[in-house]
Image (cartoon, rainbow, N blue to C red; front, side):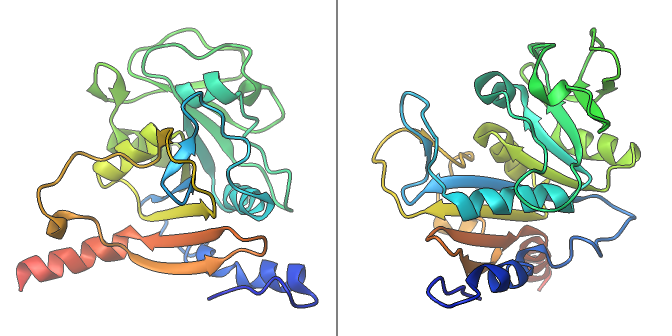
Length: 251
């Protein structure tokens, strides 16, 4: 499904046509979590320069899409590194909709107590840790299992949030967090927003353990959407890909 930016009424049609990437979000089973991850990058897979500068690789329509993603889920999840580097609000501002619960993965207890995502605006604010530590008033702390000394288990995170009533979960960043969730097959849908830009060096996006043969690569069922201002959205259905892999293995 492609959008055409040179037609009249483009913005109205774009909003309608871009509902495609959200198909299944609202009807996802309430018996298990539904996890979507998103990543914005350049054509050569960079999310920032070597100095960490990233504003803005993706353009306005991609930012609108990110906020629309937030409005479709119950919780938006980021790693503490993203909070320290960018201090994001994690609210819905660019499109109509409600803001989801804001969740920070903080395996090492590094979360600044004055982070903007912890501001009390009536939305649930949650910190995920392996051991309890102090949190600001009104902020929930949920304990999850460790994956390693520096990381928490993606599956434990998803299960804990689901048990807390958060059924649809957005893993927004950063790239390391998204990569860990992908590595451990804890993502149902992946939205990759690609800007027509070649940086040539810098911080890579998705990084997974090395494979020996291409046959072992992830091959998600993917739909492509052209955004009005030039960025391209790849909507990857990892749950469907996993089902097909299992069927092939059983054949």
